Length: 426
Image (cartoon, rainbow, N blue to C red):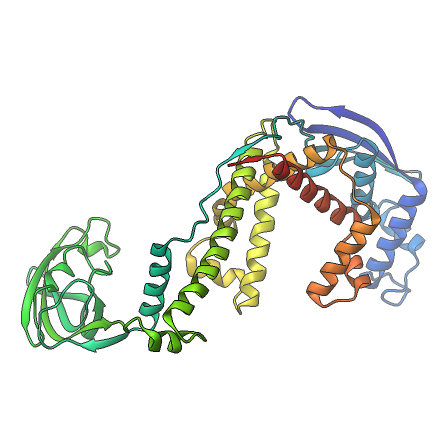
């Protein structure tokens, strides 16, 4: 294979390549195609699948296998030609054969390539770190969450319903005095203040007591999902059966023994402080990383091919499909359920895909500018970590993850560490 010509096109990161594939490689590809296709070819005088290649070519023409053989050659030929020019292909926009014969073939292609960015200003980022102070209020909030998780619902007999209560009731809805479909239920349970019903519905249950029968009036929103009810006034007849409220446990030593392995409230608070401190530290560190990432993304001012964003979004959809499969669902079922398609999913990931592409390109540029290298020892250590994490043999991990790919990932990690180490974190 040989690159005959490489022309930079007017569009950013676009090239036109003219590539020749020599006769020896083309011949091997033709023979490979012949062996695949001969099983389906019937030639009079030969058993099916046994006709010699030269007989088939004599009957159908010497070029009978050319198109498929060229398809066999295109990927490697394109890769080699781009590599020769130091280009990394992200999309192929057009590919056409110019000439072909026993001495090989030549094709022309339009490609979009990965840009090489030049960035500066990545040292000395000013970052505001979140507070990691563990206050008494945070400890109290955590205790309230634990109380809530250990609460129980009790029936209220001596008062009317209030926001925060859960009420059990029958209802039937009417518009213009006529019951409407889906507007009736018995023993329905509703948390007042949850906002799960039409605006104004829950508020009108407040103040009523168990055993009361009454009516409430509401207006359906203009954007309501049922077309026939949009903007319409409605009356709901209510029969209130039960009012329940959440009963929280007292915060004392007995409560502590029930919810933890500690004996006293003071011991429990010490434990909570340590847990909150760790959580705040993790959150603060993650926020620092996010701030640095946003600042790095802002440095990606060069023109970046849309194909890179599209490829990243496609990768994210594939990852999502894998997560769905691990949960017993496939992508097609999910899309039917959500009323969307692959393009809709890709559009959902578009913004995040752009951020990931820009961040990666900027970090690769920093790694190149800082001459960051990855030694064999570091590479082997990383393979060891991966093998341990996935409970796999190291050699199998190496076979699954190419060294070049892992090396680039490690360079990017080192570049991010360099930026973080040079940031001014306040």
